[in-house]
Image (spheres, rainbow, N blue to C red):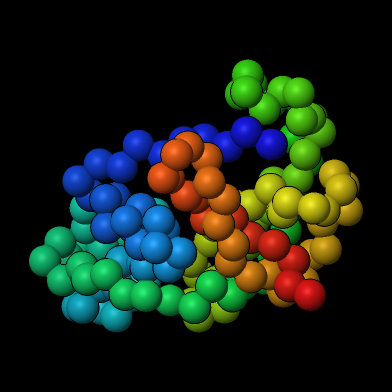
Length: 136
Ligand SMILES: [Zn+2]
């Protein structure tokens, strides 16, 4: 399935650099010790802009819920409809969420509650993205 090719900016560059090294790093707020994703200019909990540091996290999560995209408007993905769009929570901090297409899982059959692990897909030469697969 074609994926959106990320365009890193100043804020997200460290995130995408890590993804290209097959690592997952999230912003962690030193002021309130809270992880956040996607990268933002300030902590979404306490508003601190000074204390955001990059922290490597373990690529393990769970499928919280999912929907099936049947009639989406993203032209590149229309040929793949219907497809799963799952909400994945990070085990290290379940308030941190990611979206995933759960590659390999047929539409309408996403295993809610199942463990998933981080994987990476190349979407352009030299550009990886993070994705999640149901753990074996
Ligand atoms: Zn904070």
